Length: 397
Image (cartoon, rainbow, N blue to C red; front, side, top):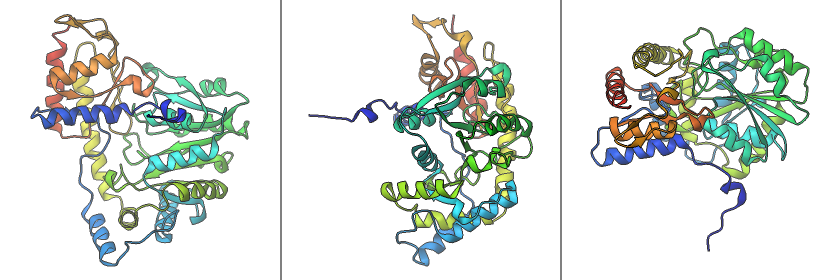
């Protein structure tokens, strides 16, 4: 007899992970797949970070770590917030987890009760709505359009607020669209939230250092709501450390204590070696993130031009992260050899099977008839991918 709890049955599988696995399955069969589905930098972890990990091993940091992270890591994170963001978070306001996703899960589970509403601007990262479901909350989706650069307006936010609203989930730079909110736009949100003292903000800022629009702005910088903001960040994107699984959050001390209580039961402390490596990443200067950002900016311009040259593919220029989020609705209803492209799911399967290019359906991000394309790969592979796409899409009638 098999029995799966209701809370797990109502969760959806991650479509980003599913498409990545389909790509790997084809690659295992010898097919040259260009995988543009995965959201991670294609750069190796910086040498000084790997050296710190080796030293940690030699120094026998191989035992259980404190639930919320070593003191030196918390101090490094605290200094990072002060120097880069002008935010004053002491060690008591910070905790480390097994990746930014884990930090996000902790915050949602701590703040959201059964029946609470969580405002989620769409397009959104696939995991947001699933974690809200798991916490027993209700997702209130605020849709946006490509014509508006996929941005939620202050008016949109105000109209979504009800007496049941508990959390606003914000992501800038955004996954999957690359949208970046300006300080003025964030100020509009802060003004509205200042009039609703029962609403908290979970601000996902994991793509902070992949920002083509200038200085990163955090909604936590607004004093009127600072004590109701939980900032999510980590080392995975900025320092090419996705596999190290080290994220962190910062916020009110009572939130950190509650998250530590939860994490203490689920996983205990994050990897001791990853923590020591992360200290080196956070204290080693920003030359690596800056150089990586320059590469992503060049690739952004490349894919924006390549996608824009494909007839029927509608694109907006991302301001950050490493994703393009085209509208592919013009292809829906077209067919080839009797196979009809009904939606973005069919479109992505068509690309994978016919062009051997992997992308993720926009439906996974709350935006049907769009696709997410990661440009976290080499210029040559990106050029080849769009060449393949253009060739097969011309066959649709």
